[in-house]
Length: 310
Picture 1 (spheres, rainbow, N blue to C red):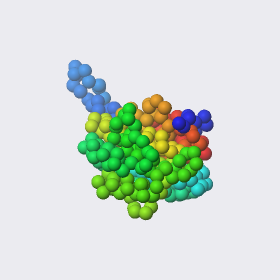
Picture 2: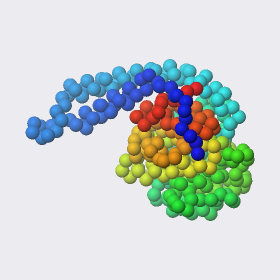
Picture 3: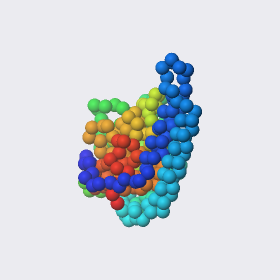
Picture 4: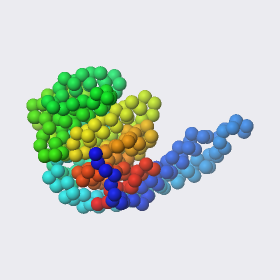
């Protein structure tokens, strides 16, 4: 189990300005002018316009700071993951630019590309849960075991894929044979649970999962919990896992937020992967996982710092 990082992280000036202003604006929009005596908040159109302007200014300042940081992040991560195999996964709602940005920085860090797996919408859905569990149980690599205390589909899928895709932490050897890995991946791809380019997947030391911006509210709650379970199970089968999403994923019901509240969680989390420094934090969190440490990074209140210290 990874331990909490004792190193201080970097705070990025202005990182939360856009978020804070946006929340303020959202509060005003949700509480418009109400007739007197209605008990509602009295907010004028001028107040709304003022808050809107403040939000625009804060976002512009944050974007300007991020553009400067984007010129520096490549050097900050250079050679931090030399010869370390890292596999990249992304959920169906992940932004393509976020995924490409993380992949580019992993390459800059010197990581060995262990492949990219796209997780389909059905992978974490309630509708796809029974078939997913059946496929996992029937294609489990020899020697791998699934939890008997908890039968959650995300957990079992993570345990199976972790055993198939991650290197042994003790000796660095593959936990599953090429044939076993191929059987599991092919079965899941044929059932539209995931997709990947044939011949590109190899076992890794750390798996990075890039997700979207879901806060896990309403019906999305089960998806967020399954994703959190999945990431935790992957982490339990190898050197570690990193889950990176946008700011709303850090809500209490979002996947990042659920992981941050989980007892004994060993997954490093990033809640601002749409920012250059958030992508840098994701790559540096991989290095942290390899050192058997864990941290929470980004703009949300639950984050320990914006990024790990380079």
